[in-house]
Image (tube, rainbow, N blue to C red; front, top):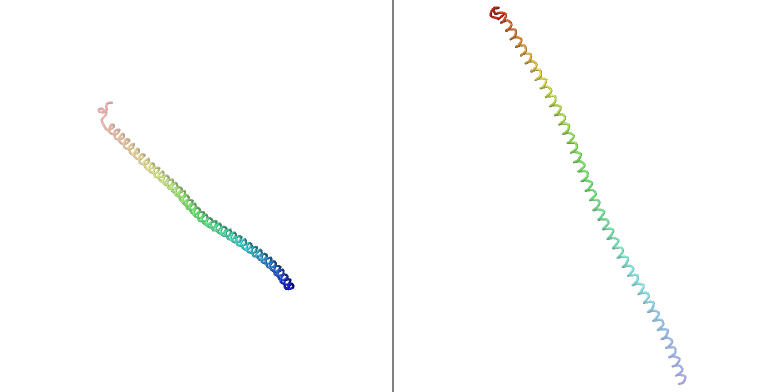
Amino acid sequence: TVERGQELELERARNKEKEEIRQQIKKEADRTQEERLSRIVSEADEAARKLEELKVAQELKRQLTLTERHLSVGDRKMRTEMQQKQGALHRFTLKQKIDRDDVRAEYIKDSKERMRRRAVQSNIDAAMAQTKQAEESEKLLHATFRTQAMPKTKRGL
């Protein structure tokens, strides 16, 4: 039975050694598992952070695209308005030039008409003066003939 006791003691020592090895393997497995879990969690956090950064970058890009579109539309609208204003200004200046030319032509036409009327009036006045002078000459001539036709005694000479 001493042998049996020694065998039991030896068996217990081996069991204890096996138990320590098992505990050590379990601790190592737990540590490995904890490292894996920690690495997976950190990788998940990193992936979530990258995903969030990607979302933010995409939103920024979307906002920039919208802003560029709004600016492009605004630029086109402004350019169109400027072209319309330039066209209106061009039409206005062209109309002013045409109006000035019309006024100038009207003035020239009126001046010619006034000159023609003055010339006609001058000719009429000259003709009337000539007619009046002729009439006066004729009256004078008739008066002279009358005077000469009168007897000398009546004439008062």
